Image 1 (cartoon, rainbow, N blue to C red):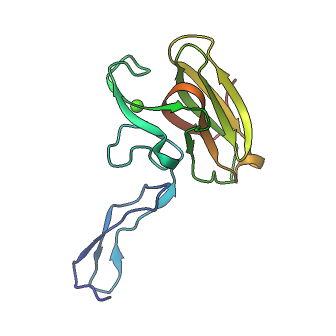
Image 2 (image 1 turned 90 degrees about the vertical axis):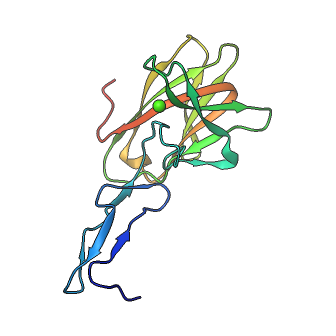
Image 3 (image 1 turned 180 degrees about the vertical axis):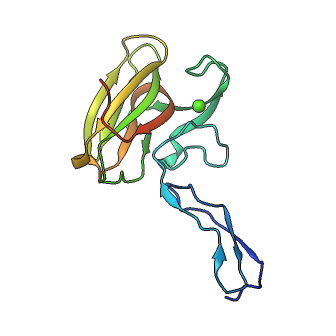
Length: 177
Ligand SMILES: [Ca+2]
């Protein structure tokens, strides 16, 4: 393909990646490009973006739904992800493969509907932690993903009832607690 001097190309990263470089590049006189994309794995999601409802997470059969609520975990209007488990249907939100470069702390907020709701968090195929209804309202949670786990994915699974999830962030160090 030939590009004319000063022509512009736009960059999009593959699913599961976000671009922390420039969004486009311009063709220079000397047949080089000015501007470069830098795609890194996207392990975070606040569910606020319409175009990418679950960010880099894979949402098989669209079991998790991006939903606007009047009271998110900050008590403000915003978007969260909601999933409802049925008998054999356990909506699963799966991260891209987590890079194997250091320990990580996944932080997220969840809310379980009262009466028997449950969420599991898996690392790879293993259930790392099970959450059951104990307290009402949004709960803050931190989960260590150690270096040895990190070629696996992290998955949020609605095990039973209705499960709410918001603001998945990642610290590139072990969790404090
Ligand atoms: Ca949100």
